[in-house]
Length: 367
Ligand SMILES: NC(=O)c1ccc[n+]([C@@H]2O[C@H](COP(=O)([O-])OP(=O)(O)OC[C@H]3O[C@@H](n4cnc5c(N)ncnc54)[C@H](O)[C@@H]3O)[C@@H](O)[C@H]2O)c1
Ligand SMILES: CC(C)[C@H](C(=O)O)[C@@H](O)C(=O)O
Ligand SMILES: [Mg+2]
Image (tube, rainbow, N blue to C red; front, top):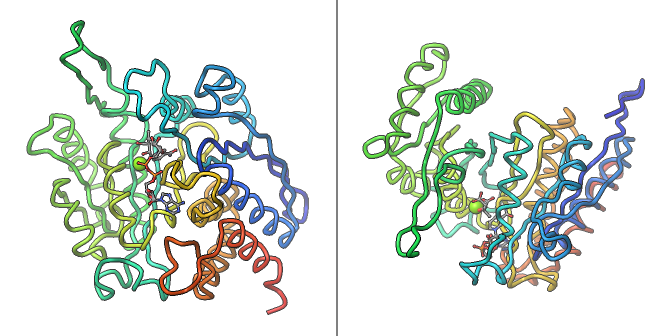
């Protein structure tokens, strides 16, 4: 990324819209990035690349080499979503879109997936949980993203096809680097860390717990607790304000964060940042929501909030990130929301919400 003497940036984005609602929500995110850049005097360029089912259809590979090079050469990656019923409903498909996502995460070294969960002011009633339970909830889930059950070998089927196996493997090094990030994050927040595992059953979880206990004295200012994942699944919705930073392995993190979206009121509100060795990547936590594809009804806010994380985590521009969040808060207050959040008010389309948020950012000065 280039910075001129006035601290104006000129950055390059790899844009991977993907499948289903991916292109629709990505279009809104790019409007917002453009509005922020115009407002703050930055410039940016985009290089689009294929990932997922659309990449299989075009070139037979869910994460083509060209896409990887585009990602490596960018300052950050914006990713929409991937996946298609064509593959979901065919368990015997030889190549799957999701393999592209895993390959992308692995080859970019994105071992940490940060998934913030909070409740926007005035949105407490949207959660199916009791308002007083969710009010003030604000926690960060740190999901390990490049190991565990998703990547362990062997994985497959016996010759007769009647036995299937996956393998969960974690090395000390993989556990240490994600825990270090989580401890440090807790230090920068309310200094509370919940390590979620299944150490009463799983060997990998026992290693996680042992390593965390060994690291604890180095972070004496952090109150560390250990919680079994089944208990955590309950506590997250029973008492979400209990949590500050929650760290866990790949599969548990995947499941717990979709569950945690209930606290916010919609899966369409949860963004994420994937960080690690190479270019950082920003994506909503939801999938390609195929039922909504092409209908202009999906909530673009998770994708838009992922651009806020892009400014904060990849571009070191917190003010720009804050501006996007304020715009999102304003759109929610004005009830300019898609059907997942519209209760008793008319639903706006995906593009209406994107336009509104981008316009709010552009006009902020006039307020
Ligand atoms: N990171 C990713 O690309 C990713 C993540 C999850 C699932 N997937 C893939 O997506 C496909 C569909 O999977 P799924 O249906 O289990 O999960 P999904 O996240 O696509 O949708 C689940 C439900 O969440 C709600 N939802 C999701 N996104 C929304 C949005 N932006 N606005 C409003 N509501 C939204 C809808 O009610 C939807 O039925 C599958 O192929 C799956 O593999 C991809
Ligand atoms: C599509 C799937 C491979 C993916 C995951 O499990 O990581 C998704 O659920 C997510 O949360 O990004
Ligand atoms: Mg998921």
